Length: 103
Image 1 (cartoon, one colour):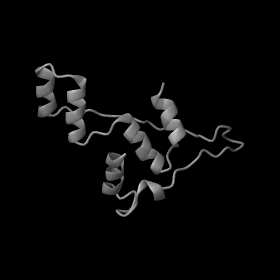
Image 2 (cartoon, one colour):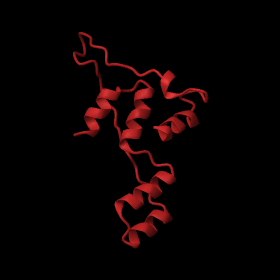
Image 3 (cartoon, rainbow, N blue to C red):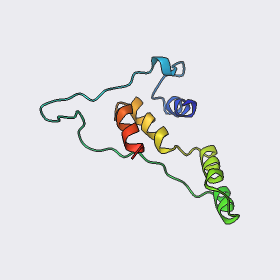
């Protein structure tokens, strides 16, 4: 969670002094046009950029945990982190993020 908060602050989506206690999250709002409260689609993703360090780990037969650790140290966001990032922006809800990543 602290990594996501760091990303949000770096992108100036939340103020530097904000904590999770004072960041609002949104709920889907039902309407006649959209019964479940969601319209359109948005992607929640993680992208692994192939760096020389990650390439070396792969060539040496490293584990997926080692690759993930290196990728995160290079700034990669996991799917759950990207989902929370987008939920803070009001693009989706925490409930929808949890539903999608649990499938």
